Length: 86
Image (cartoon, rainbow, N blue to C red; front, side, top):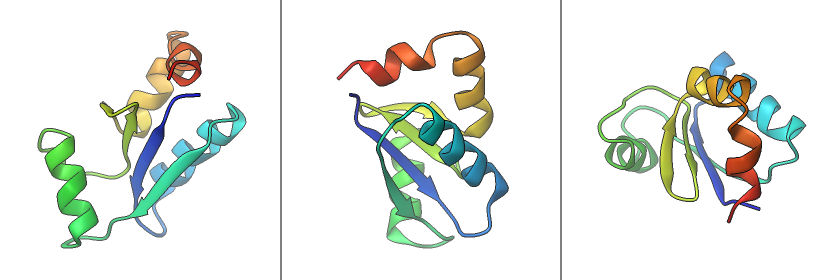
């Protein structure tokens, strides 16, 4: 199974949706609480190429974007393959 990391904040509906989809896919993931100004948020921004929104999701170190990007991968039939690799 691929290594999945997700940077989130509390009370973020997009973060919740992304985590629910990953859970439905059976993916284990590492969640980083990353409120504004935190070291975790700075790390997410750096790793994602400057994206400042949450969630920021990484599969095997590759930045795939946020919640909408995750759902787009699923609709395109690519998410299961990405999650199975690793």
